[in-house]
Image (cartoon, rainbow over all chains, first blue to last red; front, top):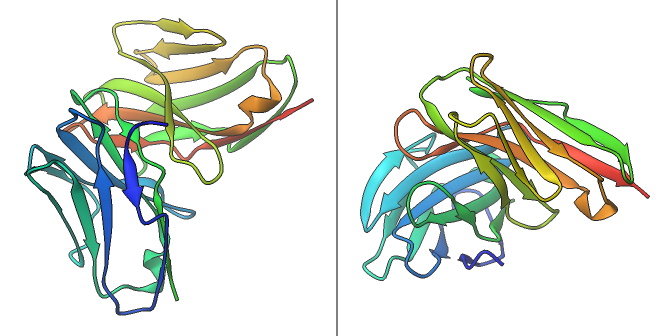
Length: 111
Length: 112
């Protein structure tokens, strides 16, 4: 158990819908990262937050957005969902930018 | 553009054997190289990591070898056990922020 929690574990929704994925980092970790894992693209970095502020952006679509709240939990919002958005979404947290500890993931299925 | 190339895609090894996974990177700005182990339905778990000023790091049965001039690094799993059957990812950090760039993964199967 990494200490990073993610909810929900599974999410099934329809195309065009909007969903919110939640992540609670390990106690004391200020950095939160979001990654997408799909069969064709592998593990890809989406976005990083540090203590409430956006720090880095990766291959994140404009339909996706994220935020980190004062209690350091983070949410990833995915809108106008397409079939191709079906994937595993992982959150990771880090105390220092070196080790990143991954949560169990949210499996998103878009029908 | 795949900045970290991992091989092989899959590997079968007998119990007690050595599993070797190789990764190559392009960007010399990378400064930290972790390996992750992922079991089906779980998130990646940090296994071992190395910095480019070190040529080898060993933790238990897991060893990273690092060749800075060749821009290559590898994971050796000694005395492989059936419980080591998982997918292994190499990664590299750096090049604008602390994001990790992952290799494509290697599925390892250890036969009893």
